[in-house]
Amino acid sequence: MIPQNRRITIKHVAKEAGVSTQTVSRVINVRPDVSPETRQRVLDIINQLGYQPSELARSLIQRRSYTLGVVTAGLKYIGPSRTLNGITTKAEESGYALLLKELPSFTSNEIQPLLQFLLARHIDGILWAVPEIGNNHDWVKQGLTGIPVPVVYLTMQPHPDVSVAAIDNYLGGVIAVQHLLEQGRHCIGHISGPLDWWEARQRKQGWQDTLKKAGFPVSDASCVEGNWSSSSGEVAFQQLLQSYPDMDAIFVANDQMALSVLRVAHRLGIHVPRDLPVVGFDNLSESAFFWPALTTINQNQLELGGRAVQELVAQIEVFQRNEQVAPQNVLLSPDLIVRESSVVQK
Image 1 (cartoon, rainbow, N blue to C red):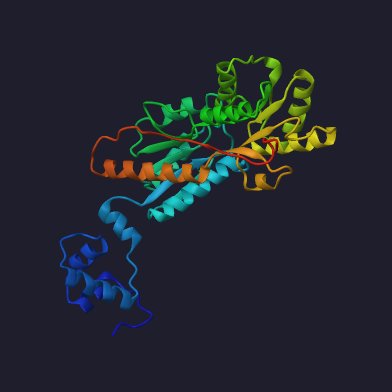
Image 2: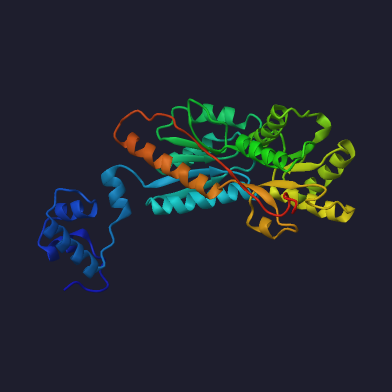
C-alpha cells in the first residue's frame, strides 16, 4: 500500500504492474514493442495510482523540452493578439508549452539577449510572430541564422530561405475590389493601413492591380493612408471625400477604420450602401453588428497561429532526427463575408 502523501513514481507503477520500469516507460511513450495485455495492465495501474509522468524526466530522456519560444510585438493590435490565441490553442493540443517574449516595439533590434534567454531554457523551436514593418525582418533573419533550433516566421513576405506562415493579403485586396466592381462601381477609393507594414502594402497593391486590370484608372487622389485606428479612418475618409469627389465605393484596409467611414457617412447623409458601398478587412466579431453590418474580408488569424505551430512542430520532428529542415511557406487564403454595407437591395 502506497501512503497517500507520497509522490507516485514510475517505480511504484512498475512494482504494482509486475513489470520493469523500462516497460512502463515504453507504454508512456506509446512504443510499439509492448504486448496489448501488458500495455493495458500498465495503463490500468497508472489510472489507479494517479501517476503523472514527469515532463522534466521526459525532456531529459528525449533531449527536448516540449516548449516553444514565441516572440511577438504589438499585442494591443487585434491581429497579433488573435494570432497569439491561435498559437496558444494549437500548442496545447500538440503537447507543447509556450515561453512568450514581447518586443518593446516592432522595430526593436535588441534580439540577441532575447535569443539567449530562450535558448538557455532549451526551447525546441521559435515562432517569430512579429509583423513585417519597414526593414525590421532584415536583421531578424540575419540574427536568427545559424541558431540551433527551427524557426517559423508569421505575418511576413514569403521568402525561399526561411519558413513563413502568412495570410494572402494581396488576394484579400483583389477579392474586395472585385466584389465592388460586381456591384457596378468603378471609382473605388481606398483607405490603406500604414504603408511601412507589409500587410498594408499588399492590400493596397491588390486594390490597385484589380482596378487597373478592369480598365479603371488609379490615382494618388483615390487613396489615403491611415494607421489602423478608428480615429485615423475618420480623418482619412474626410480627406478622401475632398480629393476624390467621384468616389462611388470604398475598400478600407481594416474594420476599425471602416467603422469610422460608416459613422462619418451617416453624419454627412451619405447612404451606405446606396451612395457608397463599403468593404472592410479582418472580419472582427463586432463587424456584423456595425450599422449597416459590414461586408469584410475574413482573415482567419486563429488558423494562422495554429498552422504556424503545426509547421514548427513538423520541423522539430525532422530536426530531432538530425535531418535537414527544408524551409516551407504557408499562405492562407482569405474569403469575403458579404453583409449589408456593400450590396444595394433591388
